[in-house]
Image (cartoon, one colour):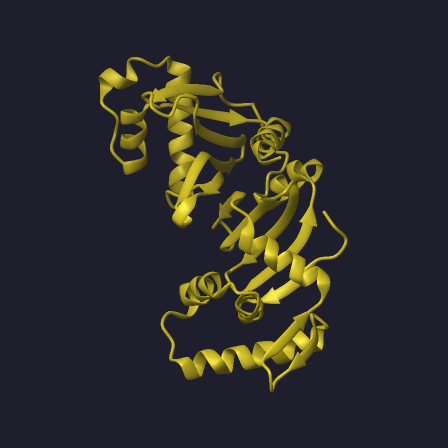
Length: 269
């Protein structure tokens, strides 16, 4: 990661996007937090943002009469990168606070964008070699003394039907359970316990591509849930998107999970 990290408030980033012809992205960002506001209130928010951006040195010059605003070269590069990147890696966690990490690719350059509770935004340049550590830190993946001590099986592959029933809170029917070994059943029971403890939610990491007409498509996704015994990784291991999904539930060690996150993120590079 670059030594230079720029911190924006929500309003500052919205204003910077709008100045660089990114009104649509700015509106989406601001409305997600504020909802619908009158034009006067938007103007007040952006006026305050202008003053704080100038005090931070992010704005080099401003001609109020002609409505011209000039940001520093690096800030302009970052904002343009945000606006024009169509391929990205996105991580979401809500366990301790709502955080979204997006790494935007554009012409083999990568911009790290961390949103903290929607109100603070951190921008810096990053490199693929850093992603394994950055993602482990983002998801709070840490070594545990209990890793691998309690379960005989570490992986189970199940049908989409069984997965849907597990995540909806239903008890799976016995015929489906009969397809699994006793060790795999214990593994799934442990995952269910951790899933319940985490309010039936999991973090996720996905690769996203934006196509024509700003249509967003998730190309691949995995779900992450830290546990006392390691880290749960859930993903569809069927490479063919048109095939019937085969959901893999795996309890990985700290070191294995780091490698999984790094390999998944490597698709962006």
